[in-house]
Amino acid sequence: MRRDDLRRVLRLATVVTGDRDFVVIGSQSIHGAFDPPVLEGPLTSSMEADVLPLLDDDGDKAELLQTIGLTDLAAGLEGAVEVDGVSIRTAALPVGWKDRLIPLLADEDDPDGTIGWCLDPHDLAVAKAVAGRANDIRYLEAMARKGLIDPAAAAARLDDLDAGCARPDVARVIAAQALLQRLHRAEHLFQPRSTTPPKGRRRPARSDFADPLDPYADFKRLAAERDDDRP
Image (cartoon, rainbow, N blue to C red; front, side, top):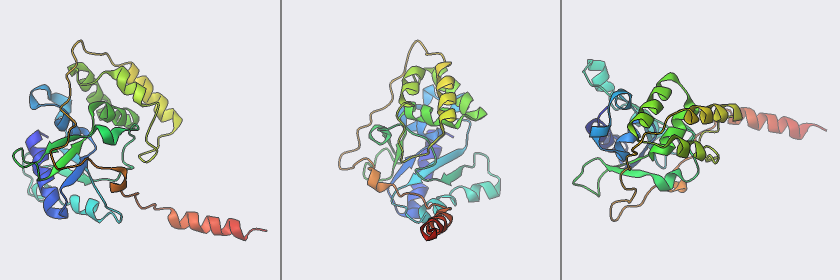
């Protein structure tokens, strides 16, 4: 997926939800941090975008986002995109990640329009390392090889994960640490784009993120009631 593809996704996200602000959680958030010439190979091979809507207590907006790209996919069009509407629990992210989000305007000439708030590259590396799938490892290797991250800096952020996001177990965190520590640091590191919001806009705050519905809520409630009934 190229930056223009992501911008199209963001504009369509506004059409289907009416919102102007979204957080790009997965691989495509790299487009907010770096310009196209340094992005290639595994960094752009995925045609799937993980988009997090704000103020989505009932999950309706995330469900609407799933409809983006379905027409292209059904028609079998080359370059069709797939969009996943996700929740804040989708990825493991370090404390302070919201303060490091990088704004990507869906329309470069419209600072009042749609913004995709993209993860800082090192925060993205943390999420990828914790996920630890084969495609995540290839992605991390490409980031390190191109000088888009300092693996040691990413590994350091694993020491303080945001409890409001995904909560990996200790074994998964240890595996993520080992993965990042075996990556080689490139001689030259590229600096990501500015985190400064456009004038008149603010970056997302914790209160903007809904806590996802707990599918086990009823079971927990029943278990608590049983415990209360015991003598």
